[in-house]
Length: 172
Image 1 (tube, rainbow, N blue to C red):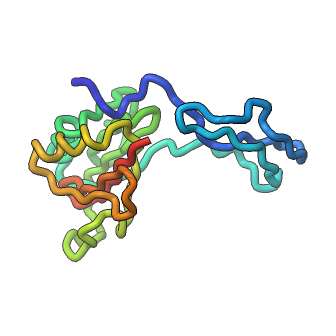
Image 2 (cartoon, rainbow, N blue to C red):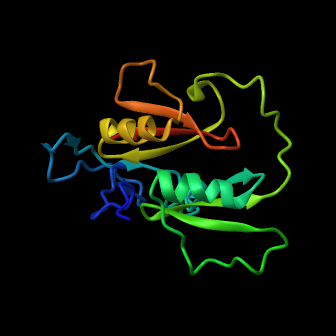
């Protein structure tokens, strides 16, 4: 199954950082396809410990098979077979989201499943960048999965997985 979450290229949309203390604007100023080139920014070396991105987001699930049905068969995410499944004291799965991952962990959930906000944007959530919100909307409609659109008017959808974990999908 083709995945709408596996990009063919990765774009670094962060501002470029110069660590030697000098401020210098990027030479290639301008924009391309809605991406604006921004000037380099100074950072304090005392707090530079090498952040390069988010590696994965851990989500709790009650039933791994039910969660995999949602994440694989509805959202089209693929399992990362290289990640350890048998070395942890609980069942789980690692799913690719672009070059990052979701780690599903079959563990008791300490959070209440009822009384959560209807709109996932008002709850803890993971946000996944996608190319086409309207395509995902059709997929969720076909599967009968409830969702809400972004309240700000930007192209984004909020939904919940079978364990009430809130997910945002924003169009980039």
